[in-house]
Image (cartoon, rainbow, N blue to C red; front, side, top):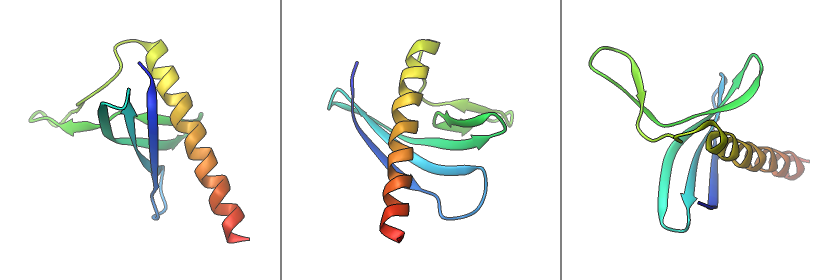
Length: 92
């Protein structure tokens, strides 16, 4: 599995959620609405989720193991940092 595209949409309002990301896997499958969140221990991703009838949120799509989650998170956070750096350069 290769992540072949990452699209970062920054969130304008203040808060913990910093961006919403879409990834393309193997140029064949897209996952939308992955959130980039600033937590107490640093940045992390939250997979797309939906609120169930019992009020809990459940992931709609997610990696099956932690190694895959770590790989996806690293790629997304690197792209997010690149997007932030480009914004600060263009603001100068």
